[in-house]
Amino acid sequence: MKKKAVVFCLLGAMALGTCTVSAANGTKNISATFRNIKIVVDGKEVSTSAEPFIYNGTTYLPIRAVGEAVGKEVTWNAGTNTVYLGEVPESAKQPETPAAPAATGSLPIFKKFVVEFEGYSEAEVSEVLAAVRSGEESAYLIAEMYLKGIDEAIYADNPQLARAAYAEAQTALASITSAPDYAEAKEEFERIYQQDFLPRL
Image (cartoon, rainbow, N blue to C red; front, side):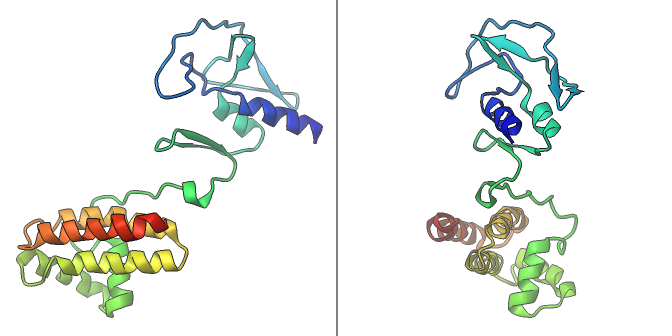
């Protein structure tokens, strides 16, 4: 246990394996010393793509290689400039941005919401989107369906689904720009999400 404690104390002081150091946003040129430093964990040498170096008496190691060597998954969150070793808190997880739909009915979250909340069959989902695009149905139908689903996801304590639904909604709304009331529906969707839902996530 004592050995592990020492290892994790070292991990807390590690940089990402570059020679650019900063305490805040920005860069700083430094004079680093390279001595062909080897990393050995439990008697086994760890191979790294970036060479460790010494700066101001502190040895900096590539965190991914060392983290994985001690059995910890390493995750980088570009949005918050944070490295996580091991479990990532639910609130810090980044939703996967859905790929652009290949066809009108391939928005998985929208399909889920329409089937659950409106009782449509999965085959009817593409008809709904086509009707909105043609102007037969209001663009608000798409916006309101996502807002209802996001609200339900937040209520069910599923912030990851709520964020993923918001991301997919951007794709869905971008596909109905030909709808007569698209601009108003998009503006109302963003207003409600930003004011009512985002503070709850």
